[in-house]
Image (cartoon, rainbow, N blue to C red; front, top):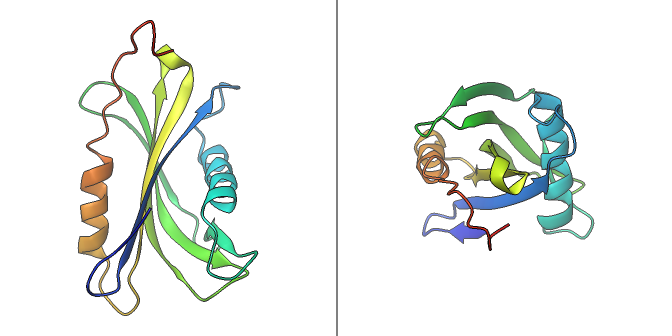
Amino acid sequence: MRNPDKFGFFNFNFISFWRIQSQEIFTRDYLIEQRNKYLKKHVPGEIEGSYIITEPLFPPIFNEYELRDGKYTAEIRGLWRMQDGLAMGGPFVSISQLDETRNRVVTIEGFVFAPAHEKRDLLRQVEAIILSLEIHEANKTDK
């Protein structure tokens, strides 16, 4: 989702889900691979054939922890850039949680595009949105 503000900043936020197919789902490399696949398919660039990728020159930081509800969480912080398109890029933060009841991984991510502006405060706003994610237990009809 693109949300331009009056200064020309863009905050992108999305949620993705995928079924658990392996015990190795919460590794840095696997999560980045899934992120890049999702971005290529669902977040096209301005020029036909362009898309967003995780910047490979500056490897993202990977952290694992438990959130307030005790759910395992994997976090990736890094930079994104446009592949085969305009010179665009910026920071992102992504968290992935295991939704055991529905046998899936839930990833929520936000990234910022704000050329020539400080990005720290913008990314912190995106972080606040992302960290408000709550996965509720499924009812029998929700599965």
